[in-house]
Image (cartoon, rainbow, N blue to C red; front, side):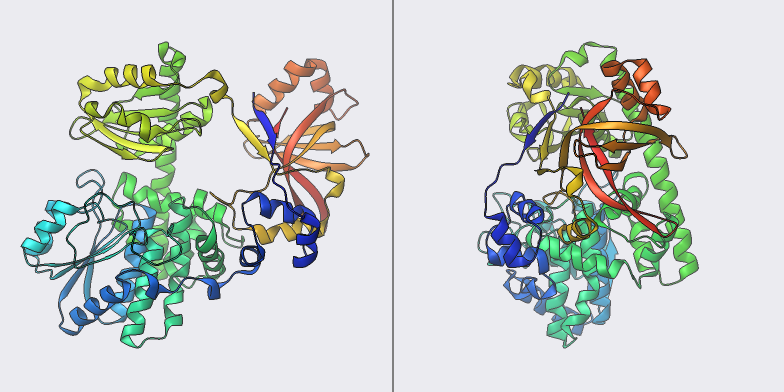
Length: 577
């Protein structure tokens, strides 16, 4: 069962609505997202490229651009070393295209997830040195590679870092470091992804090279894809990057992105942040998980439409394989939990030796959704056991792991996600100790639903639905609004969809307003819930469209259904009770 809460943040919504020409409901939604003050509200509603931060403010960005300019003039060999996820791939693409535009002798190396692990390592440094590389330029990594960069410097190489990850106590001895998280970096927005940092650097490089700054803006769509795909908070400048990037993505001139949009069945659709996060992004990430991320980079770089179509189809197939493997892993893990004492644990530690190590984090996330508990999924790696964790709001996963640090050979992370390596003989001790140390209560395991606005469906108009578009793009940090109404009368229900995975309802509120409602959740669970609450007879009547006694309180998002030239209001139900 879920607990529903109403956000109770206060402001003069009438005055905000009057000042900015928006509905009071929209004003309330903006306040709920902690956007406060006229300037912040104006930026949220209308902010475009003119509100993007000045790249010159990024510490060492101009210095790095100057070093690169000199290296290009001298004909020195430059190697970009990226990362195997969506952020690293897009950052590598931006830097490669930017440097080649300036005539650089440049190539890209992306570590292999299984063989190399994350970021710079000694093998990649030695390879670069043997192949005559003069300058290493990192993206989406490097800030923690102290020993590796010292090795590169000892070999006489120039090392330039672009990264966005948290700083370690010791900074690497690089020739320049571009990372907004540096304490002495004056750049006002600290939460850029790696590809956005790369885009800023290219803007400085173009200026140093005498290329129009506007030309660098073509990389906004790639920075947007990375920002959403790397699950950055869509606030401040990130939201503007994604908003502006989506405008480009919807008319992209990049053959690879066009082919991927085609391969995933999105041609003709308005591409949103949702499509990046759940359709396009997973295809780009799949290559780094199951194969090599160089395939995703090759797609972005491909200029031939026929070759791009083949590469895009390959990535889609890889992602389909990844989805099937994930589903298999989730069911295997759930079976082990349900059939053992694991289900009594407050923190789930599931050892799946046969699972592909790159899928551990995704499986942990799915299990967290299912059980609403912190979850660690452990698999067999090349050296010992590797794992990923996903947490709930009430549990600071990284802080709790620090209390077991003696069990790990390596670990790191955040309050809500973590990664670890440990010897096989420590697995059971880890499970035992992390649970013994936990102070979680049963209350913490109850999912919480935060309602933005309790709003009768009678208040919905086409104008309001269209106005809500100004709140996009939705994602982490700028979630899709949640509306709610109590005690809607259910008039009829039908199961739709090729896979019978949609319920279409007709609902009526206390003001006798009737509206269509769609529910895209688990149809069997929905029907079982109604049967449990109202009995099989009443549920049967509902699905036959006959008079019944069923009422539901729902959370929802309003929309407009267009069918054969007719437009009608509808709601999409998210939660019910």
